[in-house]
Structure formats: C-alpha cells, structure tokens
Image (cartoon, rainbow, N blue to C red; front, side, top):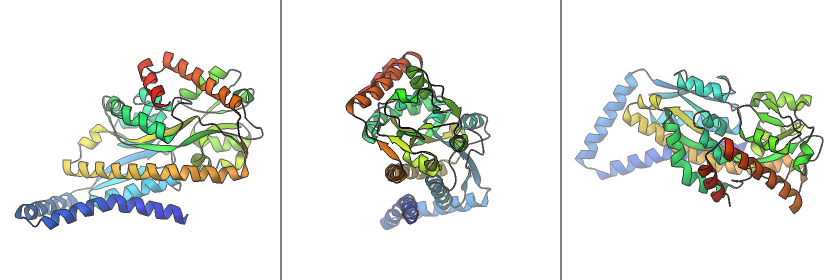
Length: 357
C-alpha cells in the first residue's frame, strides 16, 4: 500500500510540477510583457472562479479503491488544483453508469462528457481500435508501442470523425490464461469447460469459434467474481493486475505461460464537451490528462508485472514446451485470419502483424 501511495504522489507531483516550472521560467523573464500577461492571467482566473464551475461527468468500470481508481483520483485532484476549481470532474466508478456500451451511448446524447474505457469501449465508437488487440500479435509492450506509435494518429482520427477525442491511451496489462480446477496446456483442454467471454468483445468469440467445442459464458466485469465463486466460469483471459484488483485470484489456481495480448484502453471525451471549455482551460485540461496518462502507463506496466508475480505464487504455473506453444500460436493465427475477413480491413491487420514480428 505504501508503494502505491508513493507512486500516486509521484504522479501528482509530475502533473502539477510542470505548471510550476513554466511559471518560474515566465517570472524569471522580468519583462513588461510578462508582467502584463501575468496580470491578464490573474484577472482571467479571478473572473472564471467567480462563475459557476464546469463539471465534466466521467464514467468507468474500475473500482474506486483499485490502483486504476487511485490514479483517477489523482487526475481529479490535479484538474481542480490547476484550474483553481473552475473545472471539476464528477467520476462515476464501479459501472454506476452501466457497461461501456452504455457509457458511449450516454456520451453521444450528452448525459456524460467522458469515460475511461477498455479497447472494447473505444471500439464501440470506432471499431478499428480493436485491431491493436489481435490475439497472439502484440504480446509485449515494445511491440504494442511500435504499433500504437505508427497507427495511433489514424485511430484517433477515426474516433474524432465520430465526435470523440481520445485524450490518452491507457495500458491495462499483459493477458494470460488463468483457470481453476484443471491445468490448461493446449487450447483443446478448454473443450467442455466454461470460459469467460466479455460482452461486446468480438475478438475472443472468434478465438473460441476457431477452437470449436467451447461455449463461452458472456458476462460483464461485475458478474465475473460471482461466476467464479459459483463455478459458472472456470477459465479467464486476464492481466495479473485485474486478477488481483478484482479479487479473482482466490478463485483461480492455474496459469498458463502464454501471452494473448497486451490489453489497452483510453480516456475519451465528447469533442463537444471539450470545445465548450474556454481555450485556456481546455489546453490546461488536455495537458493534465496527457501527463496523467503517461505516468499511469509507466506505473500500470510495473504494477501488472508485480501483481502477476504475487497472484501466481499460490498457483500452479504451466510452463509450455515448444509444441504446446505452437498450438496456441496456430489458434491465434486462425482467429486473426477470420477477423481479417469479417471484422477489420485486411490492410490494417497486415500493418499490425508487421509490428508484431
């Protein structure tokens, strides 16, 4: 817990520190122009604070007490401090505003201004974002960084064309297979079992369809823990951090040493909500989110690896031989082939595959 608090304090210092450094450089110039600008800025904030604060309504599935929730609280505090409470966040945790498809629908109608969502939520706005989640392709952060760096502008433009602005990407963790009551060494071990499938996810259904003999159980995030407790689900693809933070670990006893994907998400806002902010406040808000997003991704990558090490201490780790890994790789390749035919543009899939080599 102490390490988490120190890291979140570091994020806050990084976000707020940038503004302070710029202010010191500005003051050091000592010119009349700087003094006049300072006076104007002071007057603008004085006038702004006299007005009613702008409250931006933001929804997420994450629990408030989780690592992700604490990052959002740091973001909330930074926005209030750097805008002198002129812009405030009203964050709805724990799926209070519904699942991610509901959040997107509410943003479209103006009931919400923003959301922190997974790649599935982003795909509800622009489907091609999910091409970064092709199974068995972007299996390391280095591969993901290459692909996202090259394709990010195109994907952000697709979101923008639908009326949304992606403020920052969010890394969520490295996805591996976890099971309870049995070992999973080959995909065929899942036949006649009860794997989890998140609703609205078009990727895993294609994987299970390629395998055959599997009837996955579609659930929302909040329904997974009760399903694990009752035995309704006995296999999940998930990052170690999610397994720990969502309290799934005590109901899982095996993990397979194979990586499905580095799963991502992002913070997305209605462009109309951002455009409604005065230009100076909008730039301040966007700068804060950029800094929080960068710091969050660095922290989550470390926390995910640490969480995986912790939860697997009480599990049996299935170390696969070359032939067993090959069965997983071939299953993923078949799913990607089908996704290129039915879900994503072939050219986009080929680009992602190139960055996954």
